[in-house]
Amino acid sequence: MESQTRELSGSPVSDIGEGPILVATDGNPHADTALIAAAFIAGRVGGNVEVFSIVEHAPLACRECDNATGASHVHRERRQQGRVQEEIAEERDARCAMIEAQVALTVGEAANWPITVYDGPLDQTTWNLVTRSHAQLMVIGQRRQRSLDLQAEEERATEALMQCAVPIYIAAPTLRGIARRVVVAIDFSAASIHAAHIVRCLSARDARMYLIHVVPYASAQELEERRRQLLNVEQSLGDESGVSVESIMLLGDAARETLSFAEGIQADVIACGASGRRAISPADTSPPEGDDVTRDLIRHASCSMLIAPAPTRS
Image (cartoon, rainbow, N blue to C red; front, side, top):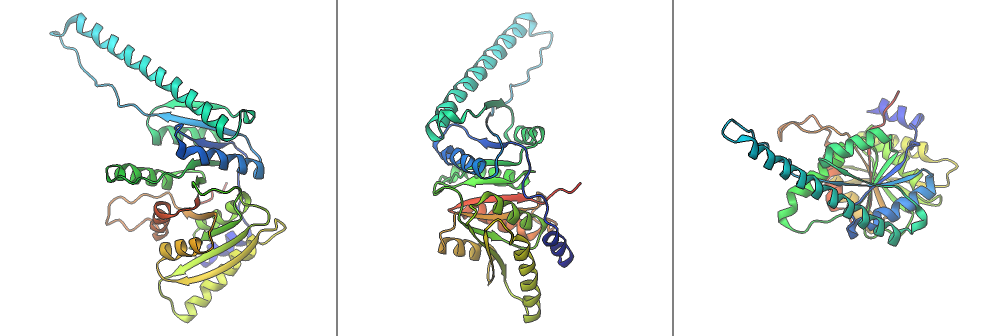
């Protein structure tokens, strides 16, 4: 862990790429802040903004025609599939029109952002789009599900965020503009340090950044070692950008203490890392413990969030 921290803090990876900023929306109000956040971020780091939406449909039932069905049955099947395709096209056009109105109302028609509506499974289609576009960032709106019936959908969305290959900015309804009070959950993983460098780029030039490292228990010697590593990360972030960086160590539950600190200072954004590795079963302990903290932060943070994968190195 020490060598990894030294490597990343001594030679920071590229903070953010040069590809487009992708904004996901389904046209509903919870995505308004995603569009607004993308406008602020584009103004801060540059880059073109592209808006996309994905319409999911249940696959058509596959019916095999045997000798008893005859040509009439095949003809009916083809007509049914044709009607379904027409309905999909109509829904896609309606979604696009709704999003055009949403963009005009939130950031103005002058933004002239391209809007594309795709068909297909949400996870795979998003993955393909991110890979093909070489996106530097994806922005989504924070959606808080209150119905128990939608709990499974929320869990699926959280896991999809954990697997994404690009940084994701989750814009909360409390969004006030470009971030000025920033909390970074640091566990010394490559992903968490990457998150710190990225969120620095996305924040205001006069922002104040707090690097939070939480330990449940540690000896005095171990605490001193972790404090030294935290200072190494702090020093790697202090440059001519003007962002003020302060490192803080806390004792207790990592997610709870990080959320409490963020609420106490009315943070604009919490940044953290995600390894992108999925557990095979509940008994699988291979994914890093930090990913459980990230999941808790995604589920309970009231402010915006930045989730970063581990950096890729050529």
